Image (tube, rainbow, N blue to C red; front, side, top):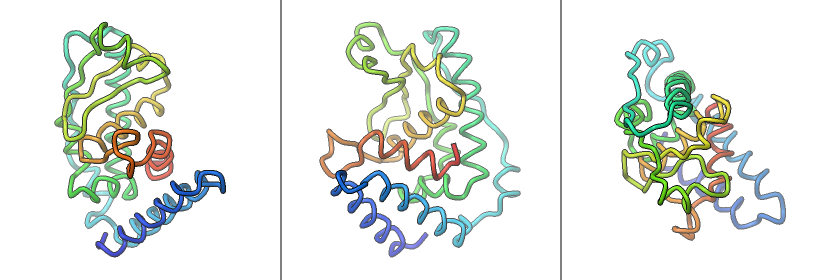
Length: 190
């Protein structure tokens, strides 16, 4: 997508964030649908058959992952990979940062959150976290108990942070975690 398209999308997202009382979430949903249309027109530069033909990779997981989280990351990783590769609107989320989402997902390393860290970081329903630009994704114990599509959404969300997407409250101009989830849900058909 061209720079002008992303500029319009950024303005749309800013409008949604600035007016939460007036249906900001609905505006964000509309922005996601606009991105879907732009990606469909742009075609992402590759046909779906070219994207699907790329070999699937397996997740790189740490030995410290508990069994339910290890099983879930294997299933969700494959599901997320499929969505990024077959949905141009999903892969377009990464194009904004000049990244290939499937390649970025393949470089991710999944670790279990240490108890000391997970006690504070994994509370409140947080299933995973990372820092912007990092390939290391920390998975909380709760990650093992969510649905496969829900876990795939979380992986794509975290990969967007790896690509460079910032988030509130650390970046006052960033999207909230919920706004990122809505964008991923719509763009990746999850």
